[in-house]
Length: 345
Length: 255
Image 1: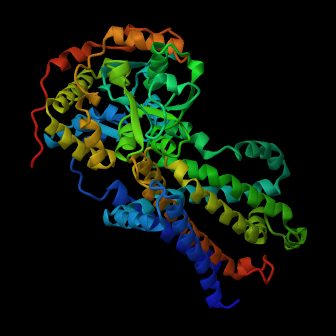
Image 2: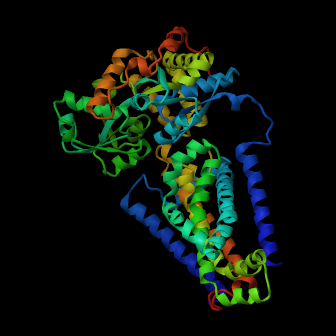
Image 3: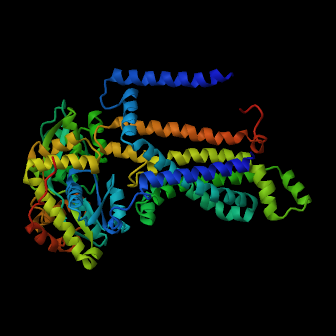
C-alpha cells in the first residue's frame, strides 16, 4: 500500500474506533435513555470533601425516590469549580464562604442561600513533632487550602486568640489532596483543610490533631451553597426545591449514626471514589467533628467572616450580608423534616 | 545489532529499573510511595472495576481529536507560512507569542468557552500540538532545496499542484519528525487537560486518586499507563518512516 492510503486508512479507522468506543463506554450515547430530563436539570458543582456532603446525599436519596431536581457535577479543585460557575455552566455551586463574598465584591451575581455544614476542619501536626499548642507553631510552616479558604481565616483567629501575629507563622497555599503526603514527608509542620484529608493522616497513623475547629471557632462555617441571581429571579421553585433537599439531607445525616454510615458507603462508592472507611472515620470520630443541622445563614456569622477577611487582606469590605445572602429560601427549608428514607439492608 | 539484542537490552534495563525502584521503596520504608508490585495490583484493580479500558479510551479519544485537528490545521498553515514570506512576516510573531504558553494557563478560558465537556480538553491538546506542527512544517519549507521548485516551475505547474506534488512531498520527512514530537506533546498534556472535571481518562485517574486519600499506587499506575501508551503511539508513528516516500529524507543508516 502507498503511504497516503495507509495513513488515510489508519487515521480514519483509528478515529472512528476510538470515537465509537468513547461514545459507548464513557458517554453512554448508545444506552437507552433512562432519565431523559437529567441533562436539562440545573448543574451543581461540588468537591469530594465532607463540607459538600449534603450535595451527593440529596442527589442519591432523590434518585432513590425518583425525583431528581438537579445534576451534581464533581470537580477536583477550587479554581475549576469557580470557573465553571462563572461561565454559567453550573447554575449553583458549593463554594468557600469568603470566596463567594469576594466574587460578590467583584460584581459577580452570586447569592448564598444556605450553609454547607458547620465545623468539620482541623489543624493536624506530625505525630512525632513537639507541637502541642499555638505557641509551638511560632516560625513553623503551615499549609492552608486557598487564600479564600476559611481555614486561613480560622488560623488568623487562632493566632489572635493566642496573642500572636500573622508574621509569626509561615502560611502557604496547597491543594488539600496533597496535604497528607506533605505532612508525612515533613515538608510542612502543620496542615489545615476540610475533611476527609485531615482524618486521613490520623487513620494512617502519622497525624495528630492539634485542635478541631469547634475548639477555636465554634459553629465554624467553611462552605456554603450559592446560586446565581438569575436562577433566583427566574427559577425560584427550582432553588427552593434544591435548598429543601439540602436541608432535609442535612437533618437526615444528623438524625442517627446509621444514616451517616450508610451515607459514608454510598457517597464514597458513587460520588467521592474514596475509601468508605475514611468517610466512616471522619463522620463518626467524634460525631460532632462535622455537623449538618442549623444551616440557616445568619448575619453575625458572616459579619465575623467579613471582618477576618478584611484583616487578612482578602476582602475589601464593600459587600455586606444583604448583598451576598438571600435568606428567603432557608426559612422554609429549615421547617422541613429529615428525609424519610433508609438504606436497604 | 541483531533482533534479540534489540528487544532484550531495553527489557533488561527496564527490569533493573523496577528492581531498583522496589529496593528503594523498601530501603526508605515509605508506606506512601508504592512498590512496582502495588502499582501492578492497582492496575489490575482498575481492570477488574472495568475502568482501565474506559479511561484509556477516553484519553485516546481526546488526544486523537485534539492532535488530528492540529495536523489538519497546522500542516497546511505551516506550508503556507513557509512559502509566502508576507504571511510569515505577518503571522510568525503571533505564533511565537502563543507557542510558549502552557495549556494549563488556558484552562480557565477553555472552561469559559466550552464548559466542562470533552471539547475543553480537546481544545487544550489541540493548542499544545498545533504550534510544533506549524513550526516544523514551516521550517521544512524553508530548508527545502530550491532545485525542486525550479524544476516544477519549468514543467509549468500551477500553485495548487506545486504545493501538493512538490512542496508537500519534499517536506514530508521533516513534517513527520515534527508530528512525532507533537504527538509526544499532545500525549504529555493529557494530565493537564483532564484536570478539568471530565469524569474519565488517565489524567483524571491521577487527579482522582489524589483526592481519594492514600491511593498513590493509582497515581503511579496512571503515570505508568501514560508512559507505556506513549511508547506505543510513538512506535506507530515511526512505522511511517519505513515508507519510501519518507525514507529518502533520512540518512540511510538512521534505522
